[in-house]
Image (cartoon, rainbow, N blue to C red; front, side, top):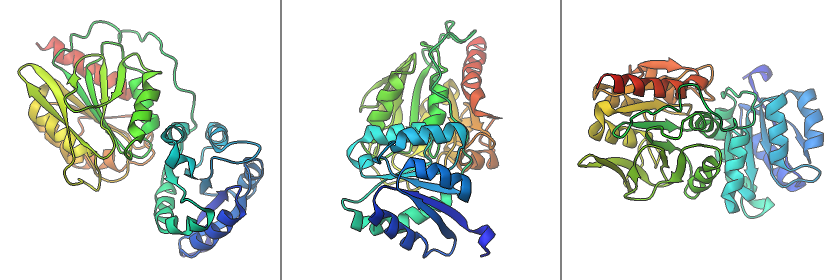
Length: 351
């Protein structure tokens, strides 16, 4: 591989031991070139300009400026794929969610001591290669809750529901979609690939931004207008129906597409129990989880949407959905919520 084809990586960490170990271990991969290191964000800023890295490895706890603040500034003015590698992301799930909301492509937990960082090198190499292909966009603050023309009118959505799946880049994408929902939006099921415990922090953050109620799903929770249920990490979430009422069931079961929760599992259950009363959307994410499930939803009479390639951080899951014919519409991220709500109005008018 020529030098021009190598993935250029900048490591930003206040620990000289971590910088040394990561430089050594990442540099052993034939596709990666560590072009520089920085002990804090101020040094990193200058090196980003000088070295033009493709991917940044970023710590959170650093002198002069913390990593989340730096990430927010970077993504607003000079967006690049960033992988957070920090001990805080293990102890404090809210920090991990904040990092993803600020624009991190991936969040990884640093081992207990600086000298054990080499234990994560192989996984980090894999994440760097994924991140290098990601399309990152300049970020803006989460939109303020406001009235949307036409969106806040009565939707009569008692037995309609939304099902949304996402992975890499999904924290930002879901925030944009869900904050655009009116208070009476259809009951919504969400699968975002996240580790156990992260989803509760993510739901809590969204609940402060949205007009709808957002919560981490519990077994048996009812699905009704104005409520968003997020599948908890390490549990599949499936839709069930009892008479005219929808509820969710949480279960372990094997991973599907290497994921638990799996978008595919959720979509398949929605196809079975909601059919033509559902609208499905598949957003940015690596891999193919949910593509065939969305196709099953469409075959069952549901309306279906995929996020377009230009606005996806990784056009894996939505791309696979488009490829297999699962997506009735392919729209940019800012049009996902309007498209979901438009489909529901069409469904209501057809009654």
